[in-house]
Image (tube, rainbow, N blue to C red; front, side, top):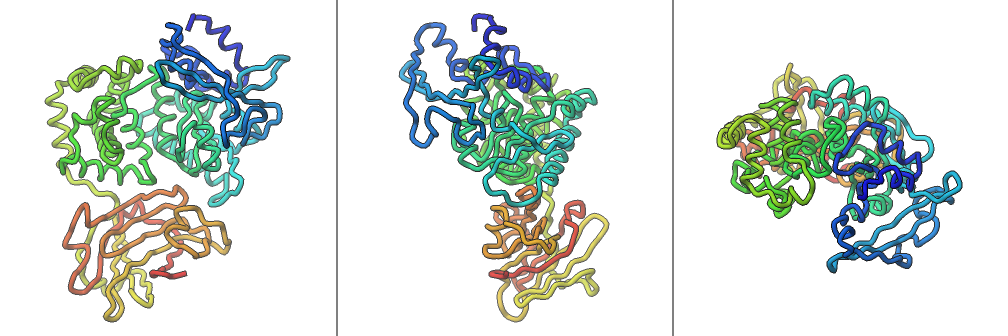
Amino acid sequence: MAGHVTAAAACWRPADLAASTRLGITFPDAPLKVDGDSPLWLRREALRARRLTCRREPPQPGSGGTGESEGIDDPGAVRQDLSFTADADTIHFTYHFRRTAGSWRLASPVALAREGDGVAGRYVVLHDIRTKRSGTSSAAAVAMLDSCVEAMADRLGMSGADRERLRQGRLGYLLADPGTVTRLAGAPTIGVANLQQDVVITSHPCHAHELAHLVVTAWLRELPTYMLPVLQEGVAVHLGGRWGRHPRVMERVGRVTLTDGWVALDDLLTRDGFQALPPDLSYAPAGTLAAYILDAYGPAGLRAACLAVADDLETLTTLDDAAVQDRLSRALGSEWPRIAADFNRHLARPVASGIVPGAATAPPAMPDTTLDGGRCRVAITFDADKVTVTVDPVGSAALAGGALLFGGSDRALPPNTLYAEHFPGRTCHDESHALLFTAEEAKLYDYRLQSLVALHAEGFWPSPDYHDQHSGGIRLSVDRRLWPEGAIVLVEPDGR
């Protein structure tokens, strides 16, 4: 704050400083990136005005207390709980320290948790510190994370130099138990992108949304510390989805949210407006807007738009709709009415989310694959661009739904959370995907990503071609590019 950056940096462990700067990302308004989440930095104006008081606190219940750092395998690290009060607002914060070069230095708890050997991939280093591991191996998990980063970099048109910088520095991925994630993130959450250390902290094996935040920051490289959520979250939704839903599913949901009038584009633009909406009504349409800007104006246009709505927090908080529209108009080189009109035309174009309802007729005379169960019969036909699935009930019983499980092996593995939710009591044999179907909806899940990757829902997109009320059968087509590889097993309700 006083401009003594070198002296401030000397308070930190050299290893933490090096880790924080390894990707060459800078925030001009926060010269010491490693300290960006400090409550002192967030309340610097109160500190300058001498309105901030600091108090040493006794150990908080369940926090692990002052002393050795809970959840971190390092007996040399100690912690101290402090509280900071300004204008009747109090925040509690825990500082971690380690003795380095003969003196006590600040230590990032995220960096402490990541010490030790991780599994390094092309773009990501995974540290799995969960007490009980399940699902895919670390090598397979890193391969999935690398694939996600590669796809995001391709979509953003990331330069070769920026990709090489990512390969040299690598993003961090800390996979931890939910309680540890909450302690490291400072609040209950499934996961968070820690921009100070460029690490995703999560209990999810492939948290693509938070990974996208890090990829975008690495792509922009030099940016203010804050960005309006309409694009900060919108770009992350477009690249990484959200709530276990693939970007293509979020895109379809976002379009429906906008075209059905649940939310208007202008409702999303300001910081207060976005945050006033329920997340179900803000994130998906923001992702749809980000996708449109990228498609219509290219990576350079999206970069300009992101930087146009990035600034210090005080400035962003004061921007109204007109000010945000003006910033985006100047960044994209077009008047706002034209941008909005073109966006509305974009929304009117048809789009699928990987599963398309088909005419509910009898199965083809010679399907490529048939699966017979006690309650239904499934016929599968492969075409160049799609795979058609027809499900007919057996006998007079109404179709109760079912699932197709893909892949698998002879190994019995602990199921991940999503698999256990779909198939309670069933032994997991490393199946990779499942196509779940009922008369109301069809969903394709990827258990490696723990994500919904394709969807048709009659409640959102009713079609007379999905469920035949007379025969009770259903028919759908899955994009051939999404069809999983491996053996297929039919699982009926309550099946094991």
